[in-house]
Image (cartoon, rainbow, N blue to C red; front, side, top):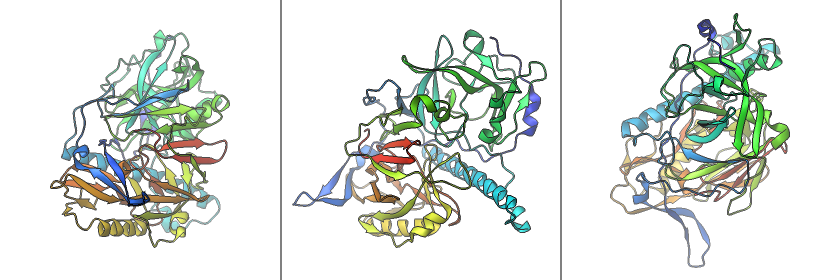
Length: 491
């Protein structure tokens, strides 16, 4: 059926968030793990510096042999349908600033939730209440990695960013009652889909929008259709009809009556993608809508560079990892039920365990997020990590900071460098070695930085970002209450 005209008045209730258009330029790090004469693994990687330069050719990996598996590509790489020109050093600064905006929005959302809980139990002081940001509950909806899904009947293929930190799936829809941003693919026209229908204002599904977006849904006075609204910190936004349609993951994995946002008024720096696939824990996320079909089980592998591909699989571990999956219990973050939380116990650099108590991580908690680029640590932990990394990299000249990244090196005079391996220790006795591609972020060979940053306060939630997840097979077994990591999940 045809999409009705959008009422523009709904924008008045949207609250501003800090925007992130979280992009990250992938660089293929060709490396080998150093061994001694007895072939015993050491705690370093040797990296070929030539491989830090971006590649213009797409190198496609094999998607797991499972029907509900999608190819994952980097938004700014040659494998992407929405590929754009190579980014400059200036762009890297903007990318990292936008990543910081996403982190701030996450912290603001969790602070708001914590304040609400404290107020309900009478434990909040008046002076604390005045400092709580008046932010929307929606996390900034952007990210790096794209999958292609089909929407409607007959299906139209759309390139959507997948995001474990967002719940609402949405795309631009004709007739774009007010405006639509420029995207590479033809904008979806619901009038050409025989399976499209609007969600009514009185539907229980409509009422779920508030917890997913932080905004109370509106109602079209003409059609009694549920209207969603979501806005980001630079005033980018999407407003449209909450709808149902058929979502196609593969020829045999077709989801009927899938709930999503059909955007009629969309403005912002959304990078040419058709928009967002929400994989959070809210009831309207793809994970929860398909709970009976896939048992709240999905996995993905983020490629090593922007010129490689990974995968996203539902209903299976999608196992391609070279080594067995190591599981850690899925934690509960009291401030929010939407994020996936982990229990971090410690970190080592080059085999040296940092002298940081486990309670430092446990007090605020840690989430894993596919949409945050750079891992954020408590400042006390980051200071220890940076200090040890600098110590083990002392033979290489330093370089100026790159935005939020302050541990940088000038490696332009070298053909290879030896970098210390970084390992994370999670609850359940799980130790995970980061791939070499998950340690460095390079703007150029003269400015290669440690891909970590500190939060502003030890009380802020830590975030395990997507750079650190590269080439790991990450398994979300929500029904089993655990998250798994497998080395060598993709290249």
